[in-house]
Image (cartoon, rainbow, N blue to C red; front, side, top):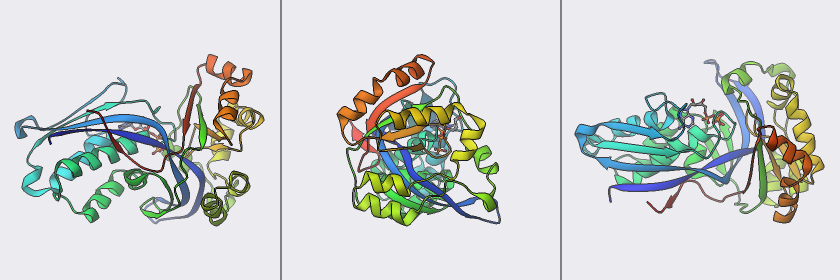
Length: 301
Ligand code: ATP
């Protein structure tokens, strides 16, 4: 086998708390992440060594050099792979996940690249090395390697899998502007965090498959930062709540909002509501999808 195609799922954060800061400035998190069915497609192909590492992406603004997460992940993988690493690799990314959205688009592409390379070169890199490459590539990459539902701590590298909760109907709603994740974290005042979740209760609610309990326990300390910078997000969150969602929150550092519904009909009615229709008309991205119990998965090449 010399090529593989994977669907690389986006993630949402059921909750996100900041519990400290490392001396090097990285924030220590306690966040419950959830893979969702909105996915990029990542094709990875082994090529003659002379061709080196090359990347293509169907979205013009996304860099295809060493700034791309897939490039960084593949280069690290090849450098640790010994003789097997002396090969050319071509990565093609078809983006469906909006960028700079709080949906881990770049991280999941990198995770899919690593999963693909590990399958194309079995045994070339140990599981421990793969985990190290993942965290060195980006804080969300370790979660994206496995997907499903997990409590992620440290800077994202300490994963505790939670019981799978597949098929919860979701809407993702992203405004026509992005936010910078580093800037959102810089704006946080650790002494005065608002909207803190009860992370243990979020984990229990996930295990009990209880959306009402999840809604009571959830929170995202980055929400006040996003809402203050972009007041339109506050109105959009209220619209999602008024449209019948059971849980509606900011994903990661935003600006994407997600809403979870008790059943697909409730989700589809909300998507068709006049308020959300008006936002779509104003350039907001609205994606119906659902929770997933896995990470990158093979699709037809
Ligand atoms: P996270 O939720 O992990 O913080 P995000 O959704 O906020 O991620 P990304 O979609 O990963 O953000 O994009 C952040 C920036 O990274 C983009 O502006 C883009 O230029 C750059 N980037 C590098 N590689 C990729 C990639 N494979 N896909 C998307 N963006 C990428």
